[in-house]
Structures are given as structure tokens and as C-alpha cells.
Amino acid sequence: MKNILSILLPALLFAACAGDTTSPTHQVKDSNGLTLVTGANPEWQYENLRIYPVVADASMLERQAAVQRLKTLAEGMRTPGFRITELKQFGRTREHSVNALTVQNKSLDTFLLLSGDVVTGGNQDRVIAQDQVVAPGTVRNIEVFCVEKGRWRYDDTNATGNEKNIYAFKGYYNVASPQVRRAVQRTGDQQAVWAAVGKITSANNAESGTHTYAALETANEAKAKRDAYLRYFDGKFAALPGMVGMVVVCGDRVLGVDIFGHPDLFRRQYDALLHGYVAEAATETYAPVRSDAAAQQAFAQVACLMAPQGRSTENAGKFALDGGIWVHLYSR
Image (cartoon, rainbow, N blue to C red; front, top):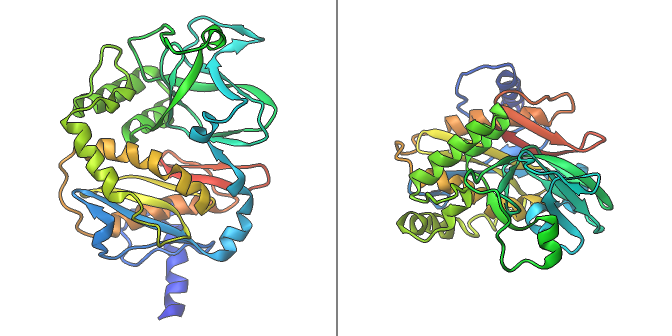
């Protein structure tokens, strides 16, 4: 049986990359060292939300050791010498540059910025547009989208004089919901991003005067419901040290896939990612999870990008470092 599966499952992955829509019926194991863990484990489901772990074998982790050194944006916002400001082209702030910010990294660390990371402050809250790394000792401009439609002013009364002069961003607010991430990744259109933000905040009764995504933090019944999801899944996968990602399913619908090149990096991204998934799942009423088939197929479509020749598609994306080491695989 083992020999049969070793032949069948790589073929299944190839079929998924080629666009085959047939739902697989076996646990999916990628030939390069990733496995989607399926089965009826009740501990991996809360209400209508189910998480399927993706684990890596030892050989893959050895190949991907360089990924472990990357720091998250949340860690960057707490690191002296790392800062994000409104666009400072040639050292001067450019007024009303909605879709660009400046990142300065004077630290010795390398930071990973995810498409979907939300930063708060500046003249208005923003969401990062593309996966990218910011190397030590660099200053660069990055593409972003606004997730706070009704504000264009710096109003942090606790900011220092220098922070006010450079319009500094001081907060990090998780990874955005799948709807917002899709608007960023698929459309690249500011109006579409605002529409997605409006939809998710309205569904969560978190509308605000400035229409900010971060209004999800407002204490209300919807937030209490989301917090129950987050508490339930806190620490649920501690017994899987090789876990590098997850396929997230809400009822009969796959919300998304996020797989990282090393388990340490995934663990540090987990809470922020889960926050975005829960913001959507807690407001939806899909049918109960009936089978593992949809998760298996979603995993196969993303995992095939791990190969050096794998290229991002309309439905799946890949971010890799120079030299071919991949960092992040995800659904769009």
C-alpha cells in the first residue's frame, strides 16, 4: 500500500498544478517533504472553523534552515532601529502618498513583510501589498493600500516630536481577513480594498468614523465571539513541532492556505494569521465540514509551487529568497 501511495500522491499534486478539479480522496503528501494532516480530530475544529495542519519532514527543514532567521513585521515594530513612516522620497515627506510607505531598517535583523500585514498610525492605517524582505541597513519604499478610508492626519497624541515630524507608524494589527487579502493580491485596486474592509467591519459590527479595519478591536458582542475562537485555537498545535502551515476551512468553504518555509517562522505568524481568518469565519454560517476533500485539493494547488519552477497563479502565490529558498506559499 505504501508503494502505491508514493506513486499516486505526487501524481495528484501534478494534476492540481495542471488545473484538475477532481477532489482527491487520500491524504496529500508532497514529494518535497510537506504533508497535509487530515482525519476527524475534533480538537482542530471550533464551531464552523476547521484547521488542517501542514507539517514538514526533517529533510525539508534542513534545506530551509535559512528561513528561520527571518523576523516578522510584528517583531520589527518592536525593534529599535526599524520603523515605517509615510513616504519620504529623497528624505522629504511626500503629501498624500496613499499607496506607498518608507521602511528603514537600522537593525541587524532581516524582516519579512506579508501581503495582508496591517500597520496602524501615520496619516491612515495601511495594509502591505506584497510579500517581501527588508534587509539590515536598508531604506526602501513599499507598496501598500489604505485600510482607513476616513482619515488623513497624524493624530497620535502620545507620539514624540520626532515621530510626529516623520509621521511614524507605531502599531501592528494582525494579518487582514481573507477577503481583504484577496482584494489586495488579486485586484491591486484601492476601491476594492476599501469595499472588502467595509464588508468585514460591517459584518463584525465594527464600523467607525474613519472606516478603519483596526476597528475590529472595538469591544462588542462580535469581538467576544471572535475571542472565543482565538482562545480555543491557542496552543492547539503545540504537539506538532514540524507544523509549517495550515489550510483553513469554514464549513464547506476553504478560506485560505498559508505555508511557511520553517516551523519557527510559522509559529510566530500563527496568531496574526488566525486573527484574520476568525474575523471572517465568526460572521459566516456555512454548512458543517463534511469531508477533507476541499482542504486536500487546496493544499495540492499551493504545495506544487514549492518546486523551483513553480510560479504564482491567479489562485496561489509563492514568495522565495534569492537562491530559490521559498519562504511563503499561500492561496489568493
